[in-house]
Image (tube, rainbow, N blue to C red):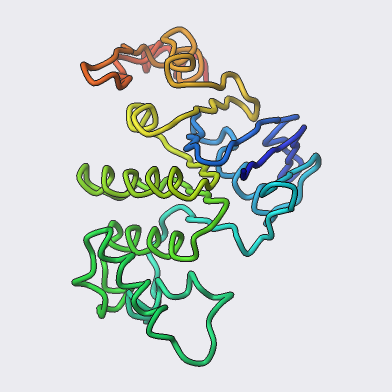
Length: 261
């Protein structure tokens, strides 16, 4: 069984505290969405887990009794248009960087093609990555993140540049991979309804602290969301049993906001 645990995690950037004594446990085979307003520490949490920024506290990952090596982590960062002149399939193969030699094997080539096929983007395999739209680049980045079959999958806004069909396609694939492989998947998402649809667990942050965690039905409470997001919301459940959140209006008017500033 894979699992990931953070204990009393503290991160400060430029002397400003971003995360404060944050503790959470993420189980293998479960898709966990990290929610919260902009600037509340969601991306910082992923970077601390990955070890790319300094932190205090502990980050523990295990597969059974053995530590999970960093090469078994995959991280899909927030979308930034890339000028890379590599082809799409070459970009996907970079996800196998720890396994590549001077020559791409037939098996590796087939694996990359199958990843592109699973996302419906095999026809663009030979195009230059830099010539793609932002949404297409994001789909390719998702293929790159999954090709190495990671035990820890960290996704930072994986659907931010995608239309509705591709949002569903990407999250379907991530959820299926998580269940089939037993991987730990932690995804930063802003769409609360998508998060509720695909997540086994939600982790709601506000000002660097965990204010709620658990199943969607236990976290998506109107009073709590209104406090965290400063927006009035309607929360409901569809006929298929999926929770959804609809923002209705800010909790204070623009003139009240200006007066407070």
